[in-house]
Every structure is written in structure tokens, then in C-alpha cells.
Image (cartoon, rainbow, N blue to C red; front, side):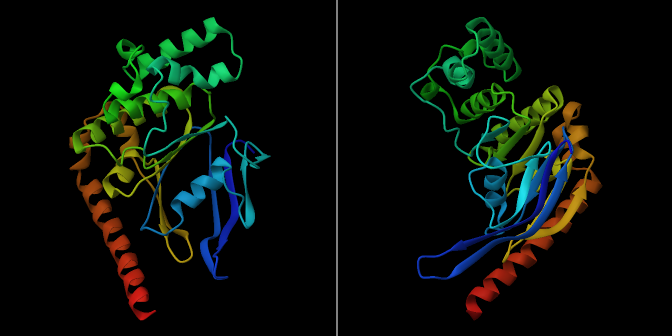
Length: 267
């Protein structure tokens, strides 16, 4: 089956004292090629664990992840990762960072040069191609990280709080860039965030997870990502439907947080 399938995935971590943490329980999802899904939930609900299983960094205790019918057994360039901090080679130039994957894969130099120029154009960094990464702002570094991920031609882009460290204005501009990349590349994107507003704006699909153990609590299909590709973010975020859905999800997560705090006090 084309697309990404998560079938009854559970993850249990064993602690040094012999105890166990049930990070995920019976999580099932299917994403068709080209879908953009945001994952939201309180701390400890297994969002990052789920992303790491899809990336191939972790093997689930039970269940499986498949991409285009192939079992995920480890990291692979078909699944690209963008972290909260860009994880870039700071001593390298922008162009060297973006070209790193294709160079390691042995791609021909003319092909690499053409790809790098194209991707730097998409993320509006062509004039910074020869600048070392350490001289760039946080937002610009995240644009380099996105371009570097795309240079490997992944089928799926996994984003773990990619905009979380940015200031509010830069973050909103980067949200627009994520939507632009989604539409221009046709890639499947899974984005983890703690921001309800960001999840609503970027998630064509939005999954709210609940903790202890991590599981899918509710799923939404939303119109705002499509609107945001060419529309004004501020106008979209003040729509009555956007605001009412935001308040519904905020209340949902607050209730979960209160249960967690109550459980901790009781324990």
C-alpha cells in the first residue's frame, strides 16, 4: 500500500530499577502520499517516540511501521528528519550543508549543484550559499535544515518541534514556508508541535494524543493548511472556526494536564 502505515504500534521502555514506562499503546494511522499531519498533545504522550519509530531510530515493542509497503527497520533517506535545533555542520557553508547527503551518496557534481541551487531558491537562501552556517540567524538555519532534508529526496519529512526555538514573527514566517514546501514538493509531512495554533494552521490532519500510555485521543481534518498556502496567516487564524477549534483542543489538553498533575500528586 502506498503511503505511511502505523499498525498497532506500542512502545514500552524498561527503567534501570526494573520498572516500565508505557510510552505508546496500540497506535494506528495511515497517511496517503502528500498528506500533512500535525501531532499535538501534552508532554509525555509519546509524540517524539512515535516520530522516532517512523524515522527508524527506535524499534517498537509491538506493531510495525511501513512506508509504501516496506517495513521500517532502521534509518533511511526515504524518511528525512528536521529537528528543533538544525543539527547542521556549523563550520560548513550553507551550500555544503545542503549538498552533504547527495555528496555522500555519490551523486554527480553537476546534478548536486543544480539541486542545491534549486533548493536554496525555494528557501530563499541563494545569496547566502557561501556563508558559514554559524553566521546565520536561527530562522535561516532552520531553512538550511529543511533544504538539506529535501536534498535527499525523502518520501516523508519528519519534523520534531522544528519551529519551537524561533521568535514569534520568524516562527509565523517559517510556518508559511512549511506550507509552501508541502505544496511545491508533494512530500508527506509529519510535524510535532506543542503549539495548538501552529498545529491547527499547518495540519491538514491533526492528531491529538493522550498520555499514560500514549494513544490517539482525537483526530481532525482541517481546511486551514490549504488556505494558508496562498492566504494570509493572520486572517486565517482569526476565523471563527479556527478559534473555536483552538479553544476546544486547548480545553482537551488542559484536562489531560490536570489529570497528569492529579495522578502525580496521588502517587
